[in-house]
Amino acid sequence: MKHWLSRQLQRSWYGESGWTRSLSPLEKLYRNAAERERVKGQLEAASRSVNAPVVVVGNLTAGGTGKSPVVAALAHYFQRLGYRPGILSRGYGASLPDKPTLVSSSSDPQQVGDEPVMLAQQTGCALVVDRDRVRGAQYLVNSCLANLVICDDGLQHYRLPRDIEILVLDGDRGLGNQRLLPVGPLREPVDRWRRVDFLLCNGDADGLPGDIRQRLHASFRLQPTGWLPLAGGESLPLQPAPVSGEVVAVSGIGNPGRFHSTLARMGLKPTPRAFADHHRFQHKDLARNGGLPVVMTAKDAVKCRQFYTGSSALEDELPAAWALQVAAELPPEFLQQVAARVQQIEQKGVPSR
Image 1 (cartoon, rainbow, N blue to C red):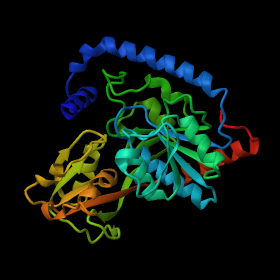
Image 2: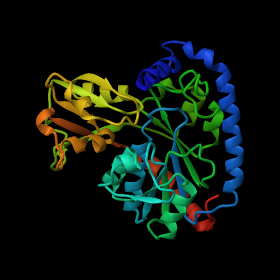
Image 3: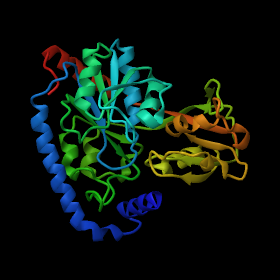
């Protein structure tokens, strides 16, 4: 039911139907609640500090735009510059104690969230999950784990002081009908983009309004980089690919269409099996596929690898499965602009506002 409702909402948001118009009274309630949270959060943030530059990477729409790969790319870049970047996450769907929780590459995604485990595996950075993102950021800095905080999501979490806001937009889907939840995909009014420091577009910007296209700082694409076998072993190069022809594309992400398109461009013939974002996979989700190999995203692999490894491995009943690894290729000029802004903040010696 949840997956069906998610599909119907997205169809309406992006022009395939219009049934969410009946939810217009809820849109007004959402707008008022979001505005109250913004004002309250900004007042609280004014009395807090993190004592290190804070970069927030977020989106304006519900669903995937590619922000987590952007976080990973920024982390790698600042590592090369000699920083100790720490990643901060809310940990969607996590069952956490009321305190900062350090995440490692072997953490249980059901306890800390799927994206945090994926980012820990990809970056090797100190990564903290905390419902209270202010507390989590302060923990990273005060524990000397980081001298730069990169927050994965959190654009609307106004309690968190921040120095730089990076808004990631989906070039294909754009802003949909430009309405607020639940009538449209927007988390905040459409003009929120005017107040961020940097605008990034994932893919071609044709689906974005003209005024946004003129303000864009950079565009990027998610580039496939390799294959990870769920049964264990080292990551393999992109070519030669371990699969060919027909595959089952299993995904529990915000925008599965982009994943399916990527596989098609690589010459594969994907049969989509899309679940709701952050879906908690079960063994049966992978078993019913007619014997075809399974391909999934790195985010989904952190939850599905348990079925192929360890004492409870069920690989004899499951098809071969591979995770397609991708990376955000951010333009060097954009990275240099962000680094210059961080250095300006350090020179001023002003705690995150």
